[in-house]
Image (cartoon, rainbow, N blue to C red; front, side, top):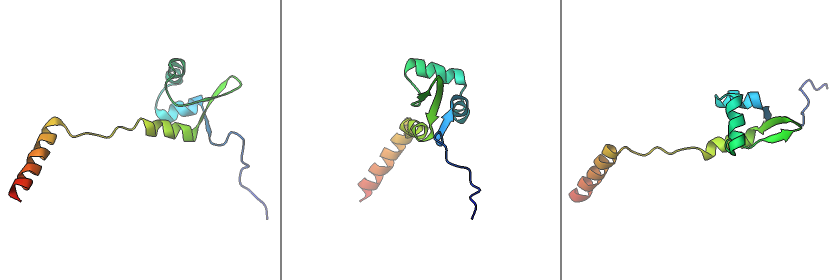
Length: 89
């Protein structure tokens, strides 16, 4: 039985700086700026090369999630609807 699958490599699960930039829709220059400012996804230095762990990149995006809030008019409408229902009970 021959195994035709590619062998696992030590760097499986990591992206190069260019690959991470492409995934985020940013330029490599932006990633460099973020690193200099202490922002952006966590990275690892492999010699002089910067690599990004895919799982850490996903966690970085997850940490940045924003839960939408209702706009002020929608909140007022919702409060009035709840009050009307409670008043009718």
